[in-house]
Length: 413
Image (cartoon, rainbow, N blue to C red):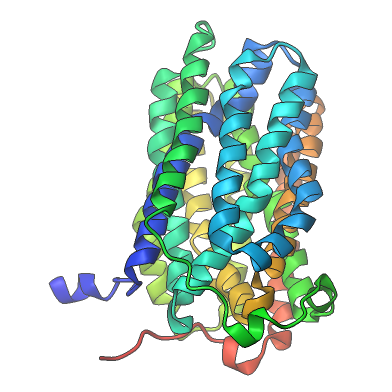
């Protein structure tokens, strides 16, 4: 039994574990807040559901605006410094949200948070890639997914206990805890050394032109846009949808988000280990296929059931969604790290983050208005996009270099 458990050891350096520790604390704060942000804006501050969706999407829009600057800053000044700066901006944006009374105020603060997030993702991913040996990068990005979701799951459970629309001050607690976790991550960064790029590479001229000429990367970017628009970005719309149409409570919302992330925590490393030695893009295609099943189950369960029955159906759906998420880090994110030269990795991940930002803008904004007018049409439409993305992942495989088509096996001692 002990030997079997050891097969799931990601075999990562100490500094990667420290980085992931900071990620757990940070994602705990996000988990406390994110499932309830739309509810806060709509039910506590009285903003329309469509307006609330636009406000949430402002974070992604700010990532688009600031993202172009993030890549060169990461490559020039190092991912550790830019990561710390991004965390501080996020703390400011989130920490001041309890004071909003008008939609424009919330838009401004969410935009500040989004600007910080624009620096957060490319810098964190670049730092992970630098700290991890190439043959273990898929495991490092799998661990990133695990630790982020562990924090989000625990945070969502705690947030569900705290949040109460009849007591607006409970949401103030959520915002302040989230802001504090960003600053806690900054403290962890002081314990990590950035190894930097090689001298010859760091002195070479770098530009976005090289990134945009990479045909494989552009195809991966497009796939990720579809993944986020039809998958990740719609998670924030699940709570108001299920609350308004099936009568689930804030506590139940916290529980099914916890189940979603618990599935990821339990399944992530075994799935990462199971797909080692297997074709990367076919493994990746399983993710949107599972998401299509999850969205259809969510839609049917909320339409045909209510209260406890709907809660069970949604919980199962988000568990399936969580299994799908386990394929993204080791199959997709690690491939981006592999095809990017070290001197350009900040730019690669910055452009890659724009796929999250753009899709994160489109998904909640469009989804919010669909939810307001034709709520039960949203999830079948999202499932259809997921099926298109699955087909695209299989088609892209022929563009992947032979050396990267198969996920590496662990080193043998």
